[in-house]
Amino acid sequence: MSNLSVDHLLGIKYLIKSDIDLIFKTADNFKKIINQPIKKVPSLRDITIANLFFENSTRTKLSFELAEKRLSADVINFASASSSVTKGETLLDTVNNILAMKVDIVVMRHPNPGASVFLSRNIDAKIVNAGDGTHEHPTQALLDAYSIREKYGEVVGKKIVIVGDILHSRVALSNIYCLQKLGAEVKVCGPSSLMPKHLDALGVTHFSDLKEALEWCDVANVLRIQLERQDVSYFPSLREYAMVYGVNKEVLDGLGKEITIMHPGPINRGVELSSDVADSKHAIILDQVENGVAIRMAVLYLLAGKIKN
Amino acid sequence: MIEERQILNQKDIQITIERLCQQLIEHHGDFKNTVIVGVQPRGTFLSNRIIAKLKQLLKTTNFESGSLDISFYRDDLRRRDEPIVPEVMDMNLSLEDKTVILVDDVLFTGRSIRSAIDALMAFGRPKSVELLTLIDRRFSRDVPIQPNYVGRTIDAIGSERVIVEWKEVNGKDRVLMVKSD
Image (tube, rainbow over all chains, first blue to last red; front, side):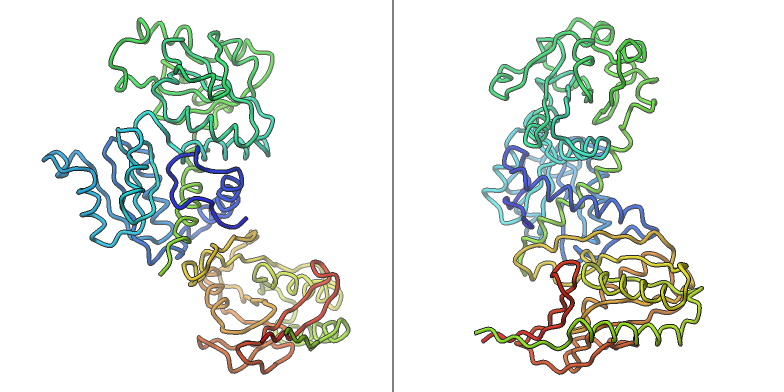
């Protein structure tokens, strides 16, 4: 298979395994390119990409922008805080205005789940979801699975536990879809107040004990506590959360084996992850960041191939 | 109807490669400052053969070589039904001030070589770049690119295709001209 089965990257849910394999294979080549002396290729020189960020982002936005520039695309950036959205413009109007400037691909982050699906049905451009509310964050899941594949050679059969705020996490949902499609076993761990109701439907079980979860897994993907999405208190205090669910050196040393630690960033040091773990050789957090650029280059390259002159 | 005609057989290819190697030795001596780069995927089969033959002729194993994937440098990404799936890039070397011999199986429009030259420059500024090709389909260039070393020059019209088969993938070495109505 040398073509994606989808026209947009809206979520991992809509992908089939061969799509993920194709993205990984393409990313392998881009990873080599971004380690060359000259890190730029001319593939997308006739493509214009708009990065629409209706929600704050640092690393995802930088990573997309770098990926786009390394592919030689023309890039325009939009941040809702400094735009007409604050004057009451609708999403569709905003985007149609931007598309009138002949944009081929839209990379969008939006606080509302399903915003990118809505956009894909209403406008004529390829859409890449860079995170829609608490729904999906497909490129993050792809780069996480890609980093696991890089570390272990393959994803199939690996045991991955996702620790933390599963309820508010788009990373968790996309990761579950992606890892399961690749044949990994996924479980989650965290306080039951931060577990979604539909876990069973996803085929995922829940550990309430961190040590038990870490004993079971090969890889722990530790998520950030998203205080900005929590409208009520889901646990008594950050200090208590850190004591019960914080991954630190002491917990890891107590395990009978070595596990790999991942984190999508930004880290709340001392809350979900202690500094000595975040900076240790078990953590592949910076590899994730590097792989993020390669994965995003692969996704944009493959989608751009579907735009005909 | 598909019409197939053999242009070179295994023996012809062997003799041609040997001749090309002698020409290379004439120009590059001991290959001290020369790098041989095969264009992926099919140019690499030819460059591997050439390197093996040179090793035999010069009784040395000191050759710098690489395989260049040009997928991301092509100019027809959006003109195809399916995206170009990249091949392996194996260029663990610097081309700074080296003479590069770019190797491909068939030279047709010249567009692949244009992309390859573009891709090469990501690995440093070579002193010069030469082109070696097994088959040169003359009078069919879209861009002004000419080879320095040619195995066989042929005249073919647009509807004809030239296919180079290699033992490694097709079971035997031969060059075919295929014409379909």
